Amino acid sequence: MSEDLFALARGAMRKAHAPYSRFPVGAALRTSDGRIFAGCNVENASFPEGWCAETTAIAHMVMDGGGRIAELAVVAERLRGCTPCGGCRQRIAEFAFPETRIFLCDPVEGVIETLLLDDIFPRGFAEDSLCGRTGDAA
Image (cartoon, rainbow, N blue to C red; front, side):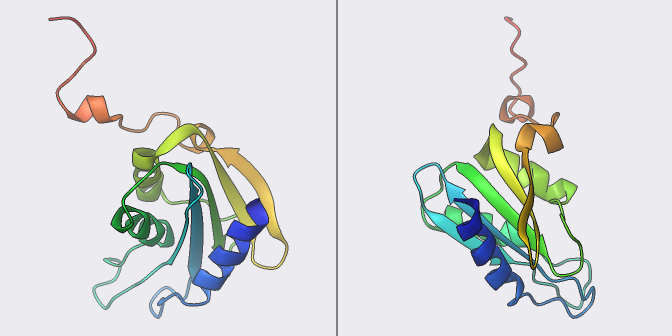
């Protein structure tokens, strides 16, 4: 199943708009109900105010009605096994499960490592920590 996400992420990477960093990245995710979305990084002249490939894929998912991320593949043209940045780890966590599989890829070889979201982002902000709920009885 991960190879189809890799292929879509690699295709998205080829569409990246990265004239400033020259660091094209692609991502593809599968929701828990089986829908698939891809995205690439998009930079602008106010570098680094662009957005990441994972952000683009998540935005496509949200625009299609949302959902929960079951799997996500990331591939960068110049970094074997590129992981999502810190900001994207939080974005992914907003829509994923601790056991969501993250596929780290090589642009030629495909998936080279599989991690769980909880492995790469064990202490992200939880929704209840930002909504004034502490879990303690008042």
